[in-house]
Length: 84
Image 1 (cartoon, rainbow, N blue to C red):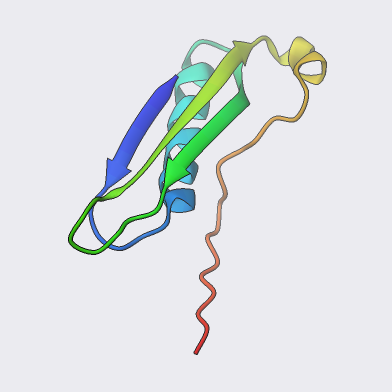
Image 2 (cartoon, one colour; image 1 turned 120 degrees about the vertical axis):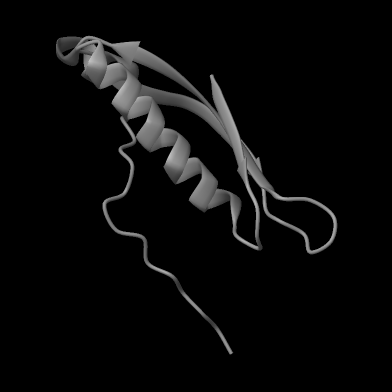
């Protein structure tokens, strides 16, 4: 499990992406692949709380990744959508 938060008015998805990236880096150092099992998060609320998230993941050998279900990789590009 890995958890984190970020100051500013951002969404929990941005925090989750950072955590997934960290999980993948940690697993890669051990020759494994991170497979996200579950996640949760809360968006920032001005004046009340920072955005936060938590992911639960398994570190698996590369040849067993398909047994664990989908593997979520950290995005290499974040697209921001703004509405008016």
